[in-house]
Length: 230
Ligand code: PGA
Image (cartoon, rainbow, N blue to C red):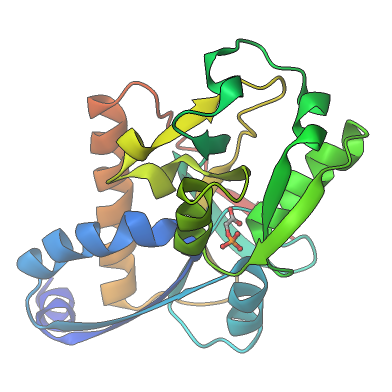
């Protein structure tokens, strides 16, 4: 349609994504911009709690997050797995062990994300469920800072596997019972919101791109169920 094409020639796309999505989304945005060079994009990268805040104030077109808010009227579409795994330094003694009992983690200094982080919440809820009390040695508000601290020998942590994207060779991933914590990334927007032509194009683009990633990499799984939560 002519009107659609016009809307896609120029326009604005405002995205807000959780911190773990920054390892993927900018790269995929590059391809999207090649398809639609007239579109200006703003991308906010922030933690779970701040995404909820932005959504409550209707600041963006689309949101990418891992944990669906329970008391908001939203439409959400899962598009890629986001498993949380146990990171340790390369030469860590546990790196050779298999099927490590989760309670063993309480003997290691632990590095935790900041309050408001969805990763932190998922990790704490698993530890609570399993009665594990870890020794939090350090609290850091950034996945990258946590990775540096792990390499520096300050402790172990649980982070999204996506944060490994470029430097997997610097870490060992511990084989701990109950891990990975299975989660997904979802594209989310308020249910009543009419997506702009540009936002809809991006939504469709991202679904297709995620499907390609899944097909290339059998370790990811993909779900096509669109759910509306009320
Ligand atoms: P976070 O988001 O940056 O808030 O930890 C990750 C997640 O919710 O999976």
